[in-house]
Image 1 (cartoon, one colour):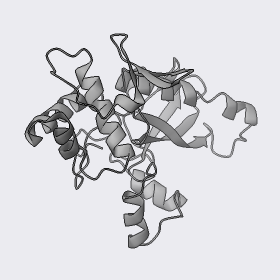
Image 2 (cartoon, one colour):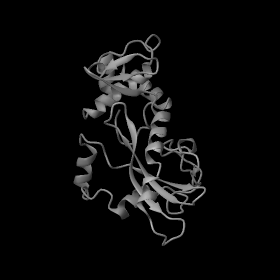
Image 3 (cartoon, helix red, strand yellow):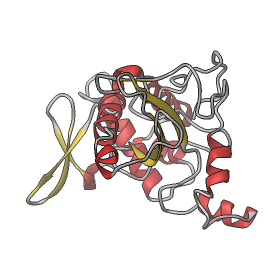
Length: 236
């Protein structure tokens, strides 16, 4: 997630959620959950005991280096409904081991307009979580996945298809290969999925290019929204 400076209360500063991702009638207030100007997602996770499977430093480190999608770095975002004034908080979590990578909603807190009002199952069913999730991924990741009889294939924006088994082959010349940076994102995602500690170095080796070249490809893929922002303390 991005740690760049942003104006107080700007919930869209890291690019995970924009107003345009929300269905009609919902809006993104200029304040974070808890009526705060700053992002308190980590504190909310802690108060809720969101992940009680990792509590010690060693358990947290094991979680960071595991081959499973992480629960760390989730981001809580606060939404309101214009007509009913319903308030909800959704937890956005990137899934780096999915190919293509995606953002999922991994938690919901529902707050009625008037404190103490009852919550019904009908109200919960009407929450547009699936629509929000789909809109985010459509904006962030241009690629889509399709299943075929012979296995999974990924359909690129140009219409070209690639098999998952071909993701770790040389990508070719960025000036000649359609969807080159989508392929960069897919190759990076597959290496991350396999637990590679330094995907950029491995990509340089696969493609026979300098490390700086592979890092430049990854940077351009991030700039195009095909990969999420990098995180401090992590190679690749």
